[in-house]
Length: 230
Length: 239
Image (cartoon, rainbow over all chains, first blue to last red; front, side, top):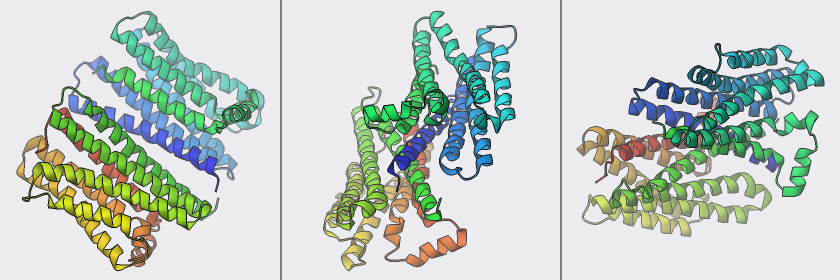
């Protein structure tokens, strides 16, 4: 019996259940309240897609990490699907905000993220075996993930009142969520391999537990940030 | 990974999801206690719901702890003690909810169902479990009666009301049935009396019997949430 593995599993299941249930409750609420303002409706709808994609991405991620150790090909595929869904979640929101905020003539940031998703799938096996490819793709993914927090930062500077307050909640949630996902132990093997061990030495808690907790906190802050808007 | 380990983790996954939804429901209802839009009696109802979900949550967590961890590590005596605490928690949860609705609705002249649940809770403390004794059978009968009262109360509300209240009382009825049955049909409860049911289930569906209970609880928690949320949304009081 591996207690650390099982606690890790329980926390991940909790975070996935939480994310899925948030998507479900928000969908149910907009269905019941019959929102007529199309901008508000689309904003909430894209958050629902965001939560769904995150939940699917996290599910593939946890299956990949805990159950596919003996099947390397499937492991790479699941890893790519997981990252693909995570990036898709961001891309859906980025696309919506790009159109609403009218930042550029064309949705360039969306194109960048779509290309990153395609590159992630094309590199495939090389992603795990070649460190240079791994670092390049990792940087592309981090840049892709950063677009959404940056857009909310822009909104914070250009708004006031409840919109600003909600944008602060969402920004905080996104940062916690994305940092949590980016600094998972298996992502740090090249960049900062000692962090998990150091963390465990200082706190006495396994580093594995941090990410699902951060995901739950992040998703809750995001939910708080937009749930008052309807 | 060995098949047994996989089943064990699958069981853990489903129970974690079920418990997380129970936690969500308890937070949701306990937050309504402080909602000033609701009147005093609705707040009391939500406090009762919140306590009910909390007792169920702790009972189910302790159930997983003794079943998956304590039998192997701390020995049978500690495991049995924790199991008893878990069952007492669950009984007290039912006692709280049946006590509240039975006294509020007073279908009979006195809250007899509440008294039955009191007996069931007392038996939980006295009975030694998994031995197939007569006292254990009596315990299961009183508990089953107690568990079935709660859905019956909501079935009655549903039958004598209209519109939103009818629809949501029916939802709570379904949720309560699923939850009660889900708790009763756990492997450790069924195995001493009807082991053939487990064998039949596994040979027919080719799925481990362990999944039945948490899946029923997951569905019941979502249905509970739907029912309670709608009653709260339309500010409807159950009477």
